[in-house]
Image (cartoon, rainbow, N blue to C red; front, side, top):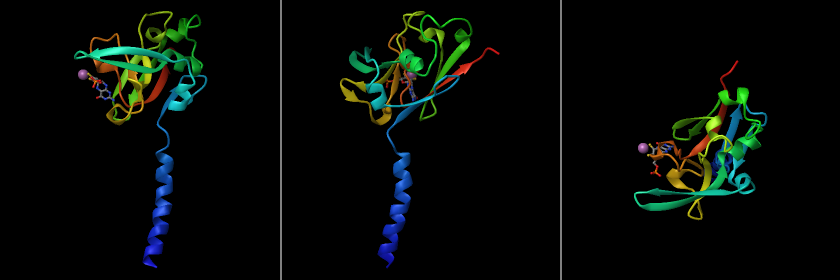
Length: 162
Ligand SMILES: Nc1nc2c(c(=O)[nH]1)N[C@H]1C(S)=C(S)[C@@H](COP(=O)(O)O)O[C@H]1N2
Ligand SMILES: [Mo]
């Protein structure tokens, strides 16, 4: 009797936990026409790009999707349409450990700067995992890796102009 009731209570508590532990994703929200929740499957279906970083002489090839493409998918005017009010927008990238990094929308537009901002889901041919998290925003042009936010969980777009 006791064993049977334990089995039942385990089953009841395990189901919600499994639902919470669904595929890792990046929430794209805020001042965007089309809020998104992107999983690795979604990123795999988007235009792919890669960058190589070198850290203490060790090269790492990150693969993923340009951040600009993610923002375009969320309906932002990347490219020719990025002008006027869009240039007073920013993107707050946040990780599951609480780390946050801020980018202006203008710096992320490949028609405005040569900056590279990759939403990476793989390194050296393997999916990211562990303390990297499933996703990392890699900024290879930076002198230090401080803005290359691991465990990327959300991108919140904010319009400052009123
Ligand atoms: N989520 C998260 N990302 C982070 C950090 C962090 O504390 N949390 N530290 C940053 C800093 S200060 C550096 S220098 C790099 C280190 O990345 P690396 O281990 O690939 O060299 O990660 C960056 N990304
Ligand atoms: Mo750092």
